[in-house]
Each structure stands twice: as C-alpha cells, then as structure tokens.
Length: 114
Image (cartoon, rainbow, N blue to C red; front, side, top):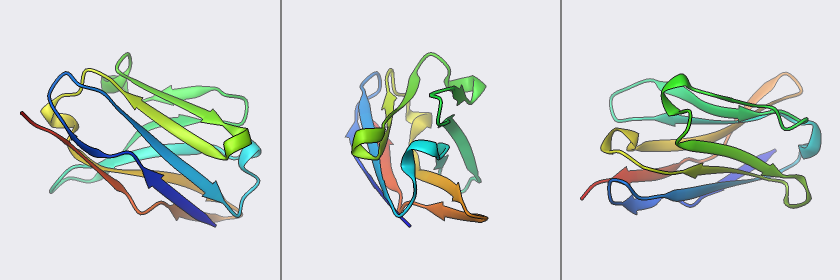
C-alpha cells in the first residue's frame, strides 16, 4: 500500500491550496480516506474523511473552509483548503485503514504566512 500526497506549499493568509493523495495497493473505491494534519509541537489531528459512498466528515473548526473529495477513477482523494489562516500551517497526511493496518502518506507541508 502506498499513499502519495502532494500539493503543499507556501500560501498567504486568505489563499487557497488543493492537496492530492494518490493511493495504490488497495481497493480504493471501497476505502474510507482521511486527511490529518500535524502542526509543529502538536499532536496529529483529523481534518476530514470521506467514505466509499462519498459521505464526508470534518473537524468542527474547519467546516465551511475545507472540502474533501475523491475521484475513484484516479484513485485519488483531494483536500480543497480555502480562506487559509496561519494556524492552518502543518504537515498534512493522508491515511487509510486497510486490512487491519494503518497506512500513512509521507505528508505534505502547508505553510500559511505573509
């Protein structure tokens, strides 16, 4: 199983970024995919998840700014992040729980700064 995340970078406050995570080695269309983030010195927290039916869940503090989506034909999950704030600065990880194991992408750094 491999999860390849991309799309991070430096963005100004109020800007947008779209992260991607391409999965291999799993039956992607039936997997629940989750984005987490870990800010410097803090624990890793759930950002959003999307299940095989397209049902989404978000951290309460991020509702309305972040949108998770998936493209099963591309085996990719996305995280659209709008109205970014400095406190959104973190390493963002995609995750899947598959056949009794947790799998993580390598992380992609998002820095929100002027």
